[in-house]
Length: 315
Image (tube, rainbow, N blue to C red; front, side, top):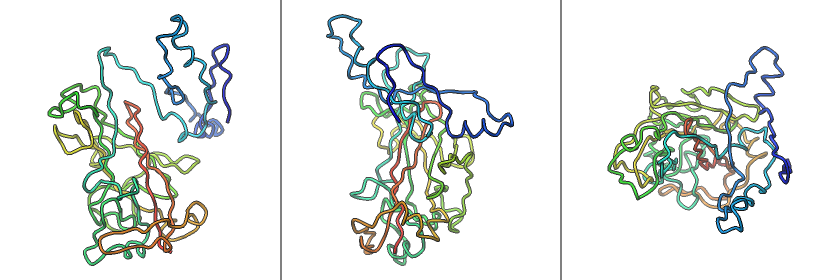
């Protein structure tokens, strides 16, 4: 990894992603570039100086900002995608935020969700009611309990009233399709309802799993998964302005995490603080954890939200 020399001529550095190289190597015609995207991850627009000596120097600091070489790892690039709108009077663009309230709130003091990966870990933090405190998900039997991950899409501004929906304000800003990406070695996406309670059985199938074991799922408000649904005006949300859609799902532990400690030994760490759920406590010395993220991305707007997740296994 290095920086491009942008002190002189314009340089276009294009590389194939890992999946693109795989398709090209297969030589069976499956390699076809049909779409592309642009991003500006490294650019700081705050460097624009309208008080410079001349208009030619207003953006000189931006143009001379070092730019990284193109990434082949799809999870390390394109976090800030560029997009085009036909309207030239847009003052606000939609975002995606975690709903940090109620059953979808983070675990207190951690700013992350905790996923318990096996029966012994779940039993150590539940009583006869099988209830877990907010922010802790039952990854062994995701169908049990009401805790889930929720992300809301809409306008996060108090300059527009939340009494109207985003569709009423501008329907072109409503995101109806989402990518959800998760490390397939660690977890799987499960439905938000109770459904099947048997551990590790996924009713959703990823559309792809790349060479880094990142599984990609696609959901829309028109499918029957109930993962993506519309938000009503003034719906309870972390958003301040008009609401668009919400994404709700649970996270199940992978077979490897449920049945083995190998990945915890290779990728994880020993517990650093006690985990408390109701009257039950899992001491820091009694568990290992792996920190990861689940990425939620709007397909049309390109907005990306990385949700922190901690997978926990009792020693």
